[in-house]
Length: 232
Ligand code: NAD
Ligand code: ZN
Image 1: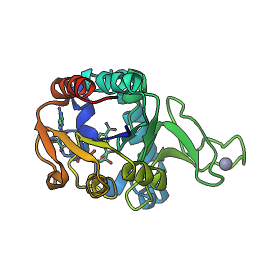
Image 2 (image 1 turned 90 degrees about the horizontal axis):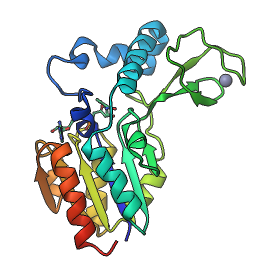
Image 3 (image 1 turned 90 degrees about the vertical axis):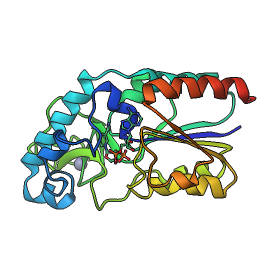
């Protein structure tokens, strides 16, 4: 049995990380056009680094919640293929014990040289003056997919989605493509599709089952039910 899970900002909400659409939080203080686009980085790299350094500090002080741990448990108890695709840039899945994780929008904990493509673990604070140790240029940026850039691992993610028997879409508004299109692809390819969200997403019509509630509460229950009902 092949399992593919796709998570979004909602799975990390109970760990204290604000979702993109939370009112009054971090994302209402900044315009994404100023901090999360290649043009913003060209215009004002210091501001882009300042915000990503803040996001990295927040990631490091947050802890995984029961939903992250339940998905790690599902992976460790499952005999077949298991892929966890996340739109999140935080590293809470790995810290909960998940192993096969693809960050389709990049990771706040990785630094990238925009000149030669070399990547390395991000330091506490990055700046536009940091120097790449391979090409010696100073065009270092966080390894994040900014608006207008291509997502990572799309071929691999689509192939796994087409081969999935069970596809779960967790804590995502379903408004950011191509991630939002994956549940429909899974359903068309014959997978059983499940959405777990606080509110139904924009793509909930592609879910065979929709479970509403806070992820930390409902994901562990869904994992237990899945483990007991399926021949994993
Ligand atoms: P989103 O902010 O657009 O939507 C969040 C979704 O989570 C909503 O559907 C909401 O109903 C649901 N939700 C909120 N609290 C929840 C909870 N406790 N339990 C279950 N569901 C809950 O997030 P998105 O769809 O992931 O897209 C936003 C983009 O911004 C993505 O690219 C994402 O990577 C990025 N982002 C990442 C983080 C992070 O890394 N933690 C945080 C904010 C935004
Ligand atoms: Zn380089």
